[in-house]
Length: 139
Image 1: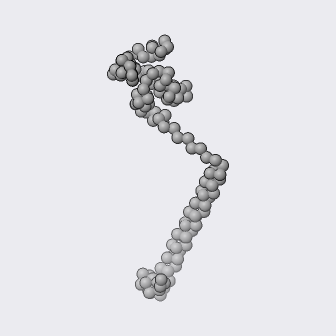
Image 2 (image 1 turned 90 degrees about the vertical axis):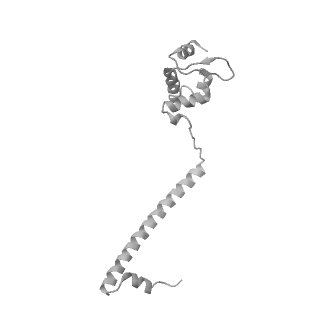
Image 3 (image 1 turned 90 degrees about the horizontal axis):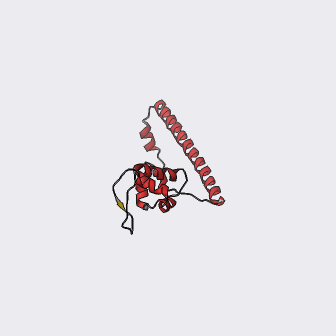
């Protein structure tokens, strides 16, 4: 452990933690925990590097990150796509947009037809629901 790490470990007191496979008890101050989380957030270290450099356990580091409210640092998901995937996604998105527009147009057309039927039934003094049942297409 270097001198900076020893100083960081000596800052303040927190509940004692036994380091894995060791009889050494390590205490980490809140300031030290914040410093480590900040170094991960700014890219100075990865989580794995911070554990190696400072000697805390992975579960302890995860707990510190959660306590600091930096849960975005816990799991980073990187999506890797090839150009075929991207062009297929673009094609599917365009098709979805076109289908949504077609469905919206059909809804508007259906509303208009319902309105026309209502007006026609009023002029013929006929009940629209009765007219629908009487003229319903046979399957």
